[in-house]
Length: 223
Image (cartoon, rainbow, N blue to C red; front, side, top):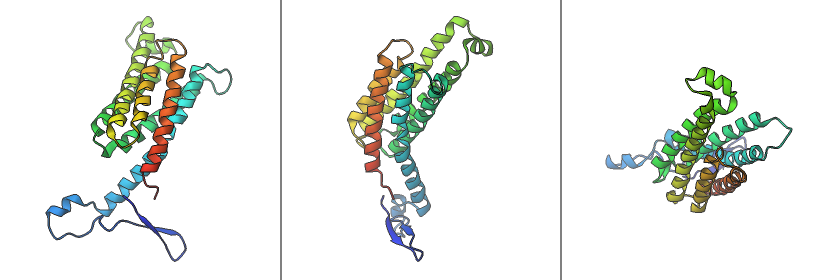
């Protein structure tokens, strides 16, 4: 969907929707293939948000890589982890929105929901002390690490489905989908394996995020 820009009397650009959007038709059957102007504006806004928010994925990978390297000083591992998770969720929502019009939209939606479920489970376990988690949940103290592993695996499974959706969508570069799936495997197993697997997962996510953000910015119109 494209839109042309013209100058108003004040010199500011004026966006004009394409002629086919909401155009009158002579037959009732043709009305099912056209969109009202309000829907066109909404779709354009969502796609623009998805294009811009995809840059949150490489940013999240940078903070996650910083977290895996145990860099001393700075804001601390908790703040870095929360920032990385927040940026990752923004980027995954944007990726699912970008794939909403592709043939893999159901797989992308399933991956997003699974990743959100894993993040919801991972946040209190990773942020709170072990004693606080045991006191607020019916579990044994030794099972906190197992719950953390399960939460990371659920997040990784959601990212894996999103990577598969990218690979099969034929909308962006399929190599970015392969990198995202490899990053999901490495990051999903990050709590149960030693270095350098988590850092390699962060580097793979960085490469996939840069590729998706660049390709998505070229595919989705800017105005």
